[in-house]
Image (cartoon, rainbow, N blue to C red; front, side, top):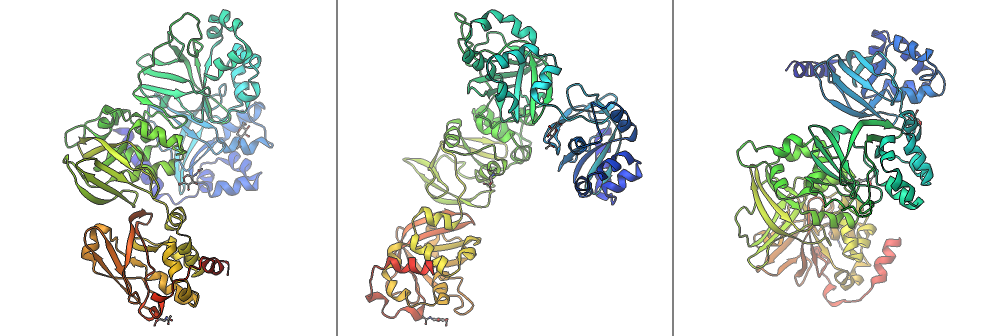
Length: 635
Ligand SMILES: *[C@@H]1O[C@H](CO)[C@@H](O)[C@H](O)[C@H]1NC(C)=O
Ligand SMILES: *[C@@H]1O[C@H](CO)[C@@H](O)[C@H](O)[C@H]1NC(C)=O
Ligand SMILES: *[C@@H]1O[C@H](CO)[C@@H](O)[C@H](O)[C@H]1NC(C)=O
C-alpha cells in the first residue's frame, strides 16, 4: 500500500515537475555527470531533450569509478558508458516499496537490471561490476532521475563475460566446435550456458562427437531473437533454439528447470540473468542440454506438455499474464484468457503475452473475439506473418476483436459486416450447411468458425485461419487488376484523395467498363475526369449489398464544380444495379462487398457511372482502347 501511495505521489510529481533534467541534475549537485556530459556536445544535447529514466551516478560514485580506471575512463568511452545510464521512453518510477526485478533496455542497447530489496532499489549492470543503490529519486519534465552510488558498467561481449564468469569449458567447447565467430556475433538472444561441472559430466560423450555434432549440441543452448530474463519465464514454455529443436523451460518453487529433447533429467539454472553485449541474457545451467537421441540407448524424453507454446522467435513468455491466466472474469464465468487457455489457443496466448499493452487490452476486452487456432497461426507465420513486429501484431489482433457480442446463438444465416477494434470491417456469412465463415482482406483466406465458447465478457469464436486486416484501396485495386481505374485515378491526380478516404462506399468500374467509354473518356479534361471518378464515391456511408435495397439514391462526393451527383441504386436481393444521371442502362455490381481499409466497402461494377451532361453518344461507342489510359497515365 505504502509503495502504491508513493508511486502515485511520484507520478504526480513528475506530471507537475516543471524542471528540466539539467536543472534537476544541477539542483542535486550532480556536477561530475554534467561535466562529463558537456565534454560531448552531442551527448549534452541529447541529455537536455531526453525522455525516460536516468540513472545518475553521484559525484562520489564517479570519483570511485574514475580511480578504478578499468571501469571508467574519461575518454571516448564516456559516451557509451553514459548512454548505458539512460533508459529511453520508460519511466521507471518504482521506489523503496518495490520488491520485484525488472530489466530495462538502455540507450546503449544492453539491459539494466533493477531489483527491489529490503535496502531499497538496487541496479545491476555487467557481470562483475558493483551493484548501485538508488539514493534519491527526483522527477523532471521528461521522466525520472534515480541518483545512484556507483556508476553502471555496460556488459562486455559474450565470450569475455563467459570467461569472467569462469565458464572456461564452455568457451573451449565453442572454439573446438568452430563456433567462436557465430557466438561473438550473437545479438538479442537467450543462452543457456553449461557450467564447467555440467560439461565434465558428459566428457566421455563429448569425446565421441564430431565437430558438427558438438556444434549441434552447443547451438541447442541458444534461443535466437529473444531476451528472456528469469522474470519472463512462465510456468511452462517451449522455446525454439537456433537448431530449430525445442527447449523446454519450467518454473517451479525451486527455480527454473531447462531440458533439451534428449535430456532425461532437466538441467537447473544455477545463475540467472548474466548480461552480455548486445542484448544477450545468459543463464548458467548445471547440465548440458541434449538433442534428441544424443545419449545413445537412452530414451528421448517424451514431447513435453506446455502451457505456452512458442512460435519461432516470437515469444517473450510473460510473468505478465501469470495472474490473468488463472483469473475469473469480474462478471462471473471464466475470463477470456482462461477460456483461451482451456481451449489450447496456446500460440495466440503467447502472442498476446508478448506485449503488455496488448495483454492488458485483452484482459479487459468485452465483445467477440475471433481466435485463430494454433494451426491457423502457424500457417500464417509460415506464410510470412511477422508476429515479432508488435505494431503489426497489435493491428492484426485488434482486427480479430469485435466490441459487441455476436453469434452467441448456434445458428446464424445471412451476411453481416462487423466493425473491429482495428477500425475496419470483417464480413461474416452464416449458412446452416457451412456454419459461420469470416472474410477479411481481399485475397485472404476465408476463416471458418470451428467452435465457440462464452467467456465472462462475451464470446470467443475459434477460427481455422488468421484474419488479415484490409489494405488501402489502391493496393486492393492493384491486386484486383483494376488497371484502368488505377490509371484514371492517377491521371486525375486523385491518388491521395482516394487513399485517404475514411468511411465510404466506392463503386469501382472494371477494365471492360472503362474500355467501353474510351472514345468519350479521351475527350475529357483532367477536371472532368475527376468529376467522373468522384461520382463513384459515396462519402460517410458503408452501403453493403445487404443494404442496397434500402439505399435508393446516394449522393456522391462530387467536385467543387459539379457538386454532389446522385447515384440511384436498385436491388432485388441478389443483383445490385447502380446508375448515374448520364447512364442509359444501369451498371451491374459484379463483385460485391470487398472490405477495404478506411473502412471502405468496394463494389466492382461493369459500367462507368456518368454525370448527366456526359451521356451523349456513349451508348453507341464501344471501342476497346486500353492504350488510351496508359497514355493518360504517362502524361
Ligand atoms: C554499448 O556498450 C558496449 C560495451 O561497452 C559497447 O561495446 C557498445 O558499442 C555500446 N553500444 C552503443 C550503441 O553505444
Ligand atoms: C511493422 O509493421 C508495421 C505495420 O504493418 C509496418 O509499417 C512496419 O514497417 C513494420 N516494421 C518492421 C520493422 O517490419
Ligand atoms: C458537366 O457539368 C459540370 C458542372 O456543371 C462541368 O464542370 C463539366 O465540365 C461538364 N462536363 C462536360 C463533359 O461538359
